Image 1 (spheres, rainbow, N blue to C red):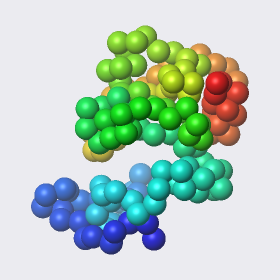
Image 2: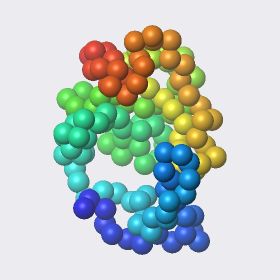
Image 3: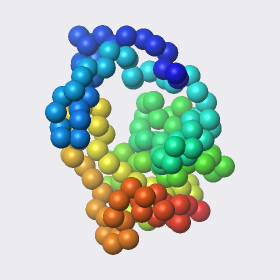
Image 4: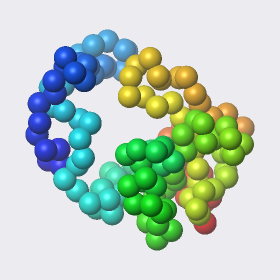
Length: 145
Protein backbone atom coordinates (compact mmCIF):
# COMPACT_ATOMS: atom_id res chain seq x y z
CA UNK A 1 0.00 0.00 0.00
CA UNK A 2 1.48 3.33 -1.07
CA UNK A 3 -0.80 5.52 1.07
CA UNK A 4 0.56 6.58 4.48
CA UNK A 5 -2.55 5.12 6.17
CA UNK A 6 -3.94 8.29 7.70
CA UNK A 7 -7.62 8.52 8.54
CA UNK A 8 -9.71 11.17 6.80
CA UNK A 9 -11.15 13.93 8.98
CA UNK A 10 -14.50 14.46 7.24
CA UNK A 11 -15.18 17.66 9.22
CA UNK A 12 -12.17 19.25 7.53
CA UNK A 13 -11.92 17.47 4.17
CA UNK A 14 -15.47 16.24 3.64
CA UNK A 15 -16.69 12.70 3.10
CA UNK A 16 -14.96 10.58 0.47
CA UNK A 17 -17.94 8.81 -1.02
CA UNK A 18 -17.70 6.16 -3.69
CA UNK A 19 -20.37 5.12 -6.15
CA UNK A 20 -21.28 2.22 -8.39
CA UNK A 21 -21.58 2.67 -12.18
CA UNK A 22 -25.26 3.62 -11.75
CA UNK A 23 -24.31 6.62 -9.59
CA UNK A 24 -25.59 5.07 -6.37
CA UNK A 25 -23.60 5.56 -3.16
CA UNK A 26 -22.04 2.29 -2.08
CA UNK A 27 -19.76 3.45 0.71
CA UNK A 28 -17.58 5.99 2.44
CA UNK A 29 -13.80 5.73 2.30
CA UNK A 30 -12.21 6.68 5.62
CA UNK A 31 -8.63 6.72 4.27
CA UNK A 32 -7.18 10.20 3.70
CA UNK A 33 -6.37 10.25 0.00
CA UNK A 34 -5.06 13.77 -0.50
CA UNK A 35 -1.57 12.99 0.77
CA UNK A 36 1.64 12.09 -1.03
CA UNK A 37 2.12 8.46 -2.00
CA UNK A 38 5.07 6.43 -0.75
CA UNK A 39 6.30 5.67 -4.28
CA UNK A 40 8.64 7.47 -6.65
CA UNK A 41 7.23 9.10 -9.77
CA UNK A 42 9.04 6.77 -12.21
CA UNK A 43 7.83 3.71 -10.28
CA UNK A 44 4.28 5.07 -10.26
CA UNK A 45 4.35 5.58 -14.03
CA UNK A 46 5.70 2.03 -14.50
CA UNK A 47 2.89 0.67 -12.29
CA UNK A 48 0.25 2.59 -14.25
CA UNK A 49 1.59 1.12 -17.49
CA UNK A 50 1.67 -2.41 -16.05
CA UNK A 51 -2.08 -2.18 -15.40
CA UNK A 52 -2.55 -0.70 -18.91
CA UNK A 53 -3.45 2.76 -17.66
CA UNK A 54 -2.55 6.20 -18.97
CA UNK A 55 0.05 8.12 -16.92
CA UNK A 56 -0.87 11.81 -16.99
CA UNK A 57 0.48 14.26 -14.40
CA UNK A 58 -2.46 16.53 -13.58
CA UNK A 59 -2.61 20.33 -13.96
CA UNK A 60 1.17 20.58 -14.21
CA UNK A 61 1.06 24.38 -14.48
CA UNK A 62 -0.67 25.15 -11.16
CA UNK A 63 1.25 27.38 -8.74
CA UNK A 64 1.14 24.81 -5.92
CA UNK A 65 1.39 21.03 -5.72
CA UNK A 66 2.05 20.57 -9.42
CA UNK A 67 4.84 18.89 -11.32
CA UNK A 68 6.32 22.21 -12.48
CA UNK A 69 5.96 23.96 -9.12
CA UNK A 70 7.57 21.05 -7.26
CA UNK A 71 10.32 20.00 -9.69
CA UNK A 72 10.75 23.24 -11.61
CA UNK A 73 10.91 21.52 -15.00
CA UNK A 74 9.25 18.95 -17.24
CA UNK A 75 11.55 15.94 -17.67
CA UNK A 76 11.53 14.98 -21.36
CA UNK A 77 12.90 11.55 -20.42
CA UNK A 78 9.87 10.74 -18.27
CA UNK A 79 7.55 8.07 -19.60
CA UNK A 80 4.28 10.03 -19.21
CA UNK A 81 1.64 9.35 -21.83
CA UNK A 82 0.51 12.98 -21.74
CA UNK A 83 0.44 16.00 -19.43
CA UNK A 84 -2.66 17.82 -18.27
CA UNK A 85 -2.85 21.60 -18.43
CA UNK A 86 -5.19 23.53 -16.19
CA UNK A 87 -8.32 24.79 -17.93
CA UNK A 88 -6.91 28.33 -17.68
CA UNK A 89 -3.67 27.40 -19.47
CA UNK A 90 -5.61 25.36 -22.05
CA UNK A 91 -7.71 28.39 -22.95
CA UNK A 92 -4.84 30.91 -22.81
CA UNK A 93 -2.59 28.84 -25.09
CA UNK A 94 -5.54 27.80 -27.30
CA UNK A 95 -4.46 24.18 -27.05
CA UNK A 96 -6.26 21.54 -29.08
CA UNK A 97 -6.23 17.78 -28.77
CA UNK A 98 -3.10 16.64 -30.60
CA UNK A 99 -0.94 19.57 -29.42
CA UNK A 100 2.12 18.93 -27.28
CA UNK A 101 3.78 20.62 -24.30
CA UNK A 102 7.42 19.84 -23.65
CA UNK A 103 7.24 16.89 -26.05
CA UNK A 104 4.18 15.33 -24.40
CA UNK A 105 0.61 15.33 -25.72
CA UNK A 106 -1.35 17.88 -23.71
CA UNK A 107 -4.90 17.33 -22.50
CA UNK A 108 -7.25 19.12 -20.08
CA UNK A 109 -10.35 18.31 -18.11
CA UNK A 110 -12.42 19.14 -15.07
CA UNK A 111 -10.54 19.41 -11.79
CA UNK A 112 -12.65 16.88 -9.93
CA UNK A 113 -11.63 17.48 -6.33
CA UNK A 114 -15.31 18.04 -5.67
CA UNK A 115 -18.39 16.61 -7.36
CA UNK A 116 -19.50 20.14 -8.24
CA UNK A 117 -16.35 20.54 -10.37
CA UNK A 118 -16.99 17.57 -12.64
CA UNK A 119 -18.06 18.65 -16.10
CA UNK A 120 -17.25 22.35 -15.66
CA UNK A 121 -14.57 22.08 -18.31
CA UNK A 122 -13.85 19.60 -21.05
CA UNK A 123 -11.82 19.60 -24.22
CA UNK A 124 -13.58 19.21 -27.52
CA UNK A 125 -12.61 16.05 -29.35
CA UNK A 126 -12.85 16.43 -33.10
CA UNK A 127 -10.90 13.24 -33.68
CA UNK A 128 -13.23 10.56 -35.02
CA UNK A 129 -10.64 7.91 -34.19
CA UNK A 130 -11.09 8.46 -30.43
CA UNK A 131 -14.05 6.37 -29.36
CA UNK A 132 -13.01 5.00 -25.96
CA UNK A 133 -10.19 4.69 -23.44
CA UNK A 134 -8.08 2.36 -25.58
CA UNK A 135 -8.28 4.54 -28.68
CA UNK A 136 -7.40 7.60 -26.57
CA UNK A 137 -4.36 5.76 -25.18
CA UNK A 138 -3.25 4.82 -28.71
CA UNK A 139 -3.80 8.39 -29.95
CA UNK A 140 -1.66 9.81 -27.13
CA UNK A 141 1.15 7.31 -27.83
CA UNK A 142 1.20 8.28 -31.51
CA UNK A 143 1.36 11.99 -30.64
CA UNK A 144 4.21 11.78 -28.14
CA UNK A 145 7.38 13.43 -29.47
